[in-house]
Image (cartoon, rainbow, N blue to C red; front, side):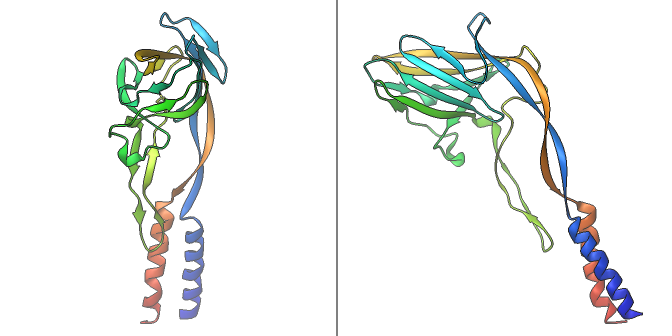
Length: 220
């Protein structure tokens, strides 16, 4: 009887162990975006959104969590991107940004300008610092998920078609500061799904209970 009960508990523990984590499809919105001027007129659309003037050619790709940028200096002088003054603006609310090479822990510190020599091309990533956070982990004898830095989606789930956001980016051009406003408009969205692995609390609890009963069998 004792041996049979042991095998039953062992079998249930194995089943519980396999169900400690579950995979589920999580929906998220994939937005299509256009580049617009100060009056809201569309100036470019597609995957690469390009702004051109006599000083720069700036191409943007709006991703799920950040904005990729490729900037070409068309002048005969060095251009500097002033990161301390650069802002991500959504719904009229400005917020500080960080870019590639900056540690998440230093995201709210002063950032030196990026130097773009004459005739060269510079690529970077723009991330709103308000979207960066530390996710607490959990650790136990039967399962764990370490903490780590995470980024929220660039645009929240309640974003609607027609909503606007932008990047205010001052640059030193030809010895003087020029304020660039790169404005974007949401044209539409498509719901897509990604696989996400999460801890099954019920399965883990049953596993812990089963393991704790094993030593009791030897006392019976």
